[in-house]
Amino acid sequence: MLCFHKIFFIVLIGFSLFLLSLPVSALEGLNHNFQFHGFLSQGYVLTSDNNYYGGSDDDGSFDFREIGVNASYRPIPLLQFSAQILSRFAGESDDGDVRLDYGFVDYRFLDKDAGWAAFRIGRIKTPYGLYNETRDVAATRPSIFLPQSIYFDRGRDLALSADGIQLNGEYRTKYGNLFLHAGAGKPKIKGREIEASLLGSNLPGDLDDEISYNARLMYEKEGGRLRFAFTWAQLNIDYDSSGSYLNDPDNGSIRFEPCIISAQLNEEKWSLTAEYALRKVKYKEFGCSFMNRTITGESYYLQASYRFLRNWEGMVRYDLLFSDKDDPNGTKSERPGHPHYSFFAKDLTFGLRWDITKSLMLRGEYHYVNGTAWLTHEDNQDASKTREYWNLFSIMMSYYF
Image (cartoon, rainbow, N blue to C red; front, top):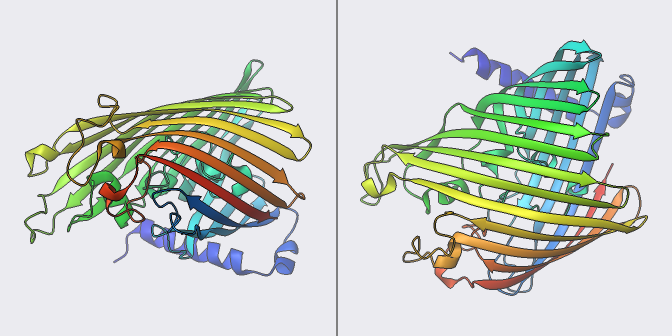
């Protein structure tokens, strides 16, 4: 017999698919409380060495595409239904399968002049840093690729969304506004890329999700001119051994606990953004004693953008990632098949954005990278053949409505 929460999610997903499948004319007839949007992005990636989003090291790769439609409906002022269907191609790590990106019911149970409070239930985007909730919509990103020190594309589903419940609220003061998002649920952890990210390789056993937690407290002043945020999350994952292979460790558990400090200043023509993260990963109860350890990674980025014309914007960013903050050069972590530079990445990025129309955007981006810590395993299955210093160039066209 299906338990209640499974029945609820089946009904919710069914409703979301129904809502998103209706023709626009029918949706517009509901009332002004309905919103319908979509986007399509196509990218091209060329690298001097290593592969990123497909075989980019050869003649470049067009295996980078994002297609999504989303809808929301508010039948009464305190209740809203929201859903988004997404198809994403990203080299070997994402094959474009259509999936429910998010789908939830939002109920505002408190609404006062001083603030409001609401809860959501369903598949909910994880409040993680400044950009995670809208990371697949190209127009809302500061660049083609988000800073990989914070927003990993490698193992991205770990932080993308979770099936569960979330409490949201805003408290308004004369000094600024406070926003709280706190939730619990089960993240999506299936896939070879996530297993390789957490365990170093694809092992014969399986990863199982457990109830995980997240929270973000954000302060905003003057309508978002100044923003500060603190994010905490705890992802709990079990490893179930197959028990039939010599290289398969016994059952164990993994706790991934990132903490992020974010700051942003937005002026009329320019913006400054910085985020710093510590990521603790604890492995315990594995039969192989060498796997039972705690590693703390460290990362940050500094980013500046400038709108030098009405529809042109330039961006520069320095992005730094250490898989183990106590081993910044990777010399202690190095092992056969995993060179020292696969445990760090230093990325200097220059980007340019052109808003051709209100619905059409073109971007170009150049990265000079030292290290390969954020390269995907699926696109670079033999890490010993990667190069420490490499260049990445990308262009992307995006349409949204």
